[in-house]
Length: 300
Image (cartoon, rainbow, N blue to C red):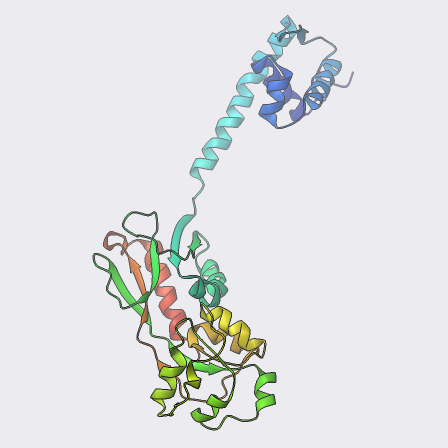
């Protein structure tokens, strides 16, 4: 007689004995009642005995079934306890929730997060890039990367960087319009605008370019720099965008900087967290990594 019985079959027997129901045992093990019935049949055939008395309402162990259940119940419980003990002893990954604006997340932070994960594999970063600003005082957020004046009462604030506005255009577009030798040359070209249509106006003023016709404020406008960079890459015109957002597109050759003359912006990016969280290891690690990445940024 072949008495070899798999652990799967024996585990199935134990579950049916506990629930006194093939249907409930199937739900517990995540299989079909038919699979349960087949495993019970295998055990009974290998042992050459009937283990259950079946009725229309439930199942009862026979005397032989009781003997087998008494022999198997403790070992299976010990296996379960060992697995649970291993799970509880296993080091858990630290979770770090970061909130920031969509443009910063998509254009700068997310492409670099792989570096952080390789350096700190036990810290699991969760990025929230919803448009609405999250209230750090009441929401389960560890870090906010904010674009603003730096005035965040009651928070620990570290300045990360102040973006520069740079002119970009696609290689194909720039080849079609010829060289741009002076800031005033840009006025004759299609200009892609920010939401408020003020960046180009500010840029021309900073370079002492007269614009009596108001040409600097005309052109298709976009709600954020990421969309404007895509439009520039599609040869729709010149864009004036924050350098931090343009780095990836420039590095990939999608756009180029045709003329020097970047200007600083009035707002900066800040690392913001609750004062009581400043010394937490995962937050310190993330801040130090951000500052290191910013330090090695290319000059556009």
